[in-house]
Length: 299
Image 1 (cartoon, rainbow, N blue to C red):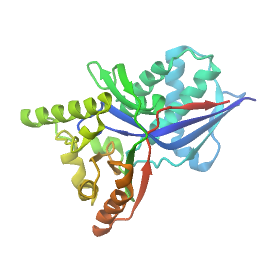
Image 2: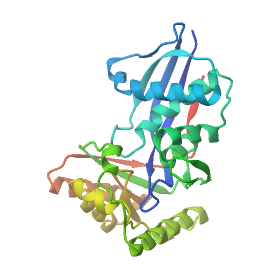
Image 3: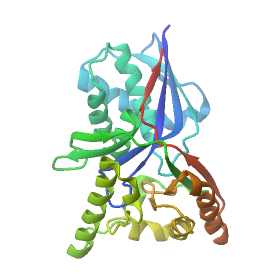
């Protein structure tokens, strides 16, 4: 019998207008443990892990098709702090953990970039995949569709920035959330969104983090998603009013995130939670640092 433990960071994606393009690793983690089986079956170790079985089996099949590796049965256990369906990359933590483990057992036919590409094909977009595998602030390049990953640019995020994540007690499925997006937007909204995404990206890559002040504004997805999450829009505004540099809807939600300097992080978190409370919504606040390491395999 052989076993591996893989730790994968959660992540925030889109970062405002960087829809399906920008991802940032966060110091909140899930751990995937896999233990080999001789019968070739993929089995959840606990009843609570069973909800991930279909996703894990899809990852196993994709790995075999992409690498022609011999099928490996295993039992899997998922633990950690990344909440499901809250816009923090929980599905990528599972996919990356399983695929990195299988890749190690198969003598690593896939590079880290290859793992990102495979996860992107499974997820349909590279934002969380890049951040979960590699950490840091990542900008993905795609081909004809967001699932056609062509590469990335990645920079490390300084420790001085805090990421205040507030998650209401509401689950949001990414697939359902994409259903509220319109098939078209105006040229003006597209221009404003491109401008915001480019400027925020330049602030991270240049290291001129003071330029993050008010940098995130989006007209691609947030205007359509935020109204469906009670208190979310008010929470972002409250965080910025309390001193945060900027804020956005994390992925498809339900979590919202504000970027803050150390001395404003706690009051930003309190203000964001209060905004949800005012709307009668329970929420949990986390003040996190960026993760620059990506996934880690513990032999």
